[in-house]
Length: 446
Length: 166
Image (cartoon, rainbow over the protein chains, first blue to last red):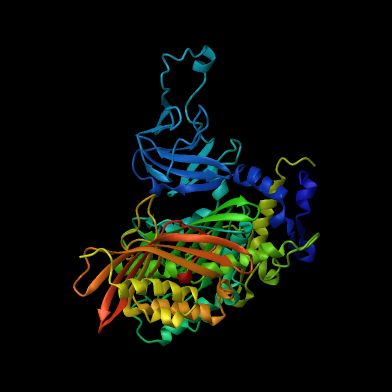
């Protein structure tokens, strides 16, 4: 799995014959996983954190770039930096405990200290150390991650100095970040409460599933039937009605569409009933502020994947997921309930209950997803030369470039698709896997 | 007042665990009052839990027993792939003691729990553990659960967690 040919063979893409297939080695090969870590997670831009997690000077947040521990720090002057979280002396972690506030970070091992701009401010007993000139000539500061940038609170970093500018990597992803951030004039916040879980399968199963409208009726009938059950029970004051409640499951969700972007980002949208949406009560004001078109898009169900590791879901509630691959068959998820700043107490409560019900690993829907990913990974032991048959639904409804929905948003996707909800498009994965393959092939010997 | 609860109150805590492990869901539900609150908060940092289910994320929050009935309905429905073959579970509860501050006619109980979970189809196992805070109320001579708070210590969850393994 070193040559460009090996990587080319992972995808069978013959546009003239309308063939697009992904090889199962993409999900089960240790060699592919190693390349993904080197060339995607540690070789391109990835999401590392949200600015609201470190609002004050000297706040810090521990994170990961692929397998590397990093720390984001807000310096005394309010600027943000991203550093390798490893003491220059002996390598120990410098920052601990997820997040916090500290003017100085003192290494627990030998007491070297760093300030919140990453500068080394103390080497214990330096005067007595008899260090050679060569030591004094070296920098002892924390190593700054070469590339680091922010878009509206979302923080991205790259270990690769030569990576293209952040704006180009994000591209039209910014439109879908805006549709989240602009839900309130004061922006968004990540609600307190850590939720994290692991599943025993490849990280791309989560990537795909978020974009997968096809699985909803077969994986989540217990959730949707439960909503029907609650609706039939009359006034259940203990639970806020969910978005789809009392709507005979998802039958009213008649329309769907998808966009795939050259950078590997992708979006699936549907039109769902809006009356139970947490934003619905404030719709008139929202339309005045952002316009009727963008308000309509905010109320649509949107599942957005910012390649490779950030997912913004807007359906039962607003959810942010961060994917961290731990091994070819083990993935860690960290998930956040996102809310517009300043929403009413009632809307907040409704949002939380819908969020917990659907998205938590202790909820009524996500466990059914993760259980099926694990089923897939077991099934991937299926031997040589096996191709997934899960990327061709919707081919006849897909078109290259922008459709009318893309044009109204002013975006330029590589593919667009629009059709009946039951089309359950899978062509949205094409851009994802082509970007994935392009990054893997970068620098590979031919 | 003794720190040891009345035997019939402590028994309720043990019995609840026994019903869960035996998958006697109706008996389990019958231990709860209709208006019972069921709450498993999330952690905010190393040692602080979320404090308000209305403003912060919980792992599970229901303000009435109906939420638990929903959960039981789901595992019985045959429609949840994560619940088709339920794991075998074994709860162990210890240190059941009374706590101060119970309103009139109620008891506050504290205890420590573990739940060993065996995933039958995968021959895999893990353990969840934490603390319980039970608030019991005596309704016409019988103690029932008015509120239960579950503190889950190991909250990086392997795949999933549900009412029967906490």
